[in-house]
Image (cartoon, rainbow, N blue to C red; front, side, top):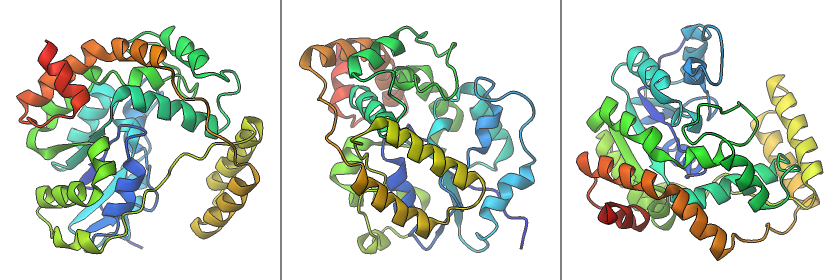
Length: 309
């Protein structure tokens, strides 16, 4: 098999803003070839907050695209790239030949709630049975992300402070960066995916024939401890190459039926207002950066902020 090519299209996040669905949709386009796994994560090795030491050989990254021999675009989707900061941005710019980059943003209040319920699905919230407990723990962390600890699951609040990193992506990649908004993506995926295709210079008529059912929706467990055990076993099996996609899909269905539960109680109005205030200044900075780069039609959660500055 060929050593593989490097990607020229990246979906960089943010987490819980539809990147799983976007990966599934773009993978179906005949001019786009997806990596052999969604989140390759190669450029996370350049983020000193996540990893120490040298990154793996570039040949390891190429192997994920060895099957992409004739497609115009080869791509992967790693949401953690989005908040990796300058080191990740600089590594992408230095390694890839003028890649196209898609960034999906979501109302950070809703994104935070989704992050909490997702981590609860994975069984990682046993210490924080209520959203308010999780929020309090996140608030104790530095708002600039300087004290984040990988895999402690308390990145949720920081990730929604888009002003810490979105302007850097806009400045670094300019017209080679395409920002979409998760709320519009969810309500009209055909229009958003067709817009991405036009931006990429490929046939957007194909979108009418794609399967645009949502991917990776959060399932709420009856027992978070059982969820944690199940996902620990799953990750261990994946690392050993013991879980092919078809088997993984079947086992996921069996597990969800066995451990299906009700979603956690919704965020209260009082807590929502508090979180909105936490994000207010960041939203204002993000909105101004987007406006400066030609994004005039912003979603309500950004339009209101932009108008208040």
